[in-house]
Length: 165
Image (tube, rainbow, N blue to C red):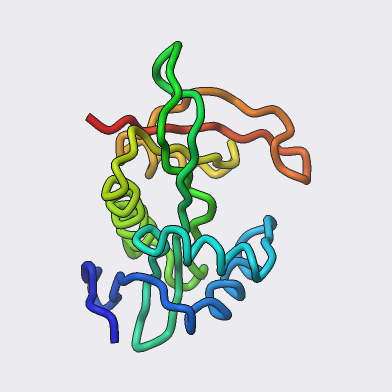
């Protein structure tokens, strides 16, 4: 049994375990149009377990966030190669939304990336997902650019980033 990182009402926010992956993959399939291979989920969990977080209610996983670490050009400085976190995927089952779970998952995912001494974190979000954009802005993320036809269905994305002090 894992230790809770935080509670959100009756929900437990904790690190993902290997046994959670089938449910996490089901949540991904049910809630997002972008899907990944089983191996991809497994590799993210093994590479950065401190930023692969789940939300659980009565022993049932209802949401997750998974992040990875990359090296690349900063989203904030004109010149500079940095170590940065990337929010690969975050999702909460529809019936558990608007409970603060997305915010809690984001905070714990960010904390895990910070623990790896990164300089910043970024994500891509559909421009039509205004609720998510607003939540990310409340967490301090800034829209850095618009990625034209980023998604397979042709929708644009915002690249949003947060620099750590």
